[in-house]
Length: 298
Image 1 (cartoon, rainbow, N blue to C red):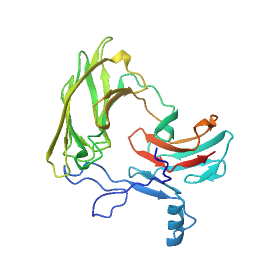
Image 2: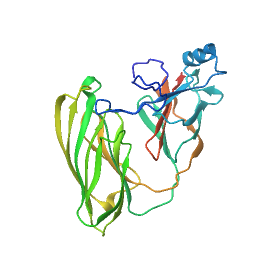
Image 3: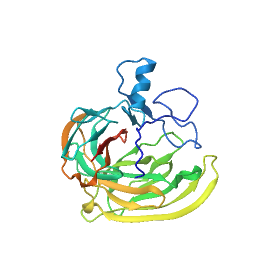
């Protein structure tokens, strides 16, 4: 938004040196470490730094996902001039099935391609994500219960919980309890549900902030919603929880998402230029990759 020309990288924040496998050791660290991927001519120091300076880089949440993003012959990170429609090409291969790929213009999501999956009735993903702020006290503690007005949870799977001390368990046939932390990432649960028509999924809980030392930073907010299962689709229903991108999202999911996706998309409207276009890839297991932008000038 400020017109800066930057590349996107990801990294860890610990002292273990386990690139792409930086796992939080206790509740003071909230996020699994990431990794930076580089398009270089070779593995020499000079080639690597040339690639960084050219922004031929992308970041992931730690998984070695493959991502190629180009505009014609121009690679991610490049600056090009054009008053004509621009066609972008995206190629990605995941370490798990690919849920969706989003194309952004600046901070605005302008196009989405969904991975084709096999339908599985009664399978729902509910996630909570985001941060309290962009400052030190950004960690958000999520606590509460997920319930069914009628029916049962026949399977409950932890989703993107970074370490064992985060709690999520099935308390009864129709009740799940959780106590987890996010700091910009997402946590959640994948549920297989057997319920009659008209049953509702409910969440009752709260969020509050804390700093990296485990000290309470206030910002308490109650969180509650109820949604008929019949109203849940494969497009996210989102409930805001304040903060920075802090929200709860619920949607239907399937199985056997594709591991590889390729497509082209054309930006026909040149009135937004200059602009930065970039790609986000989301896998079914929550792993994410972000490409450096391609900068289109007038």
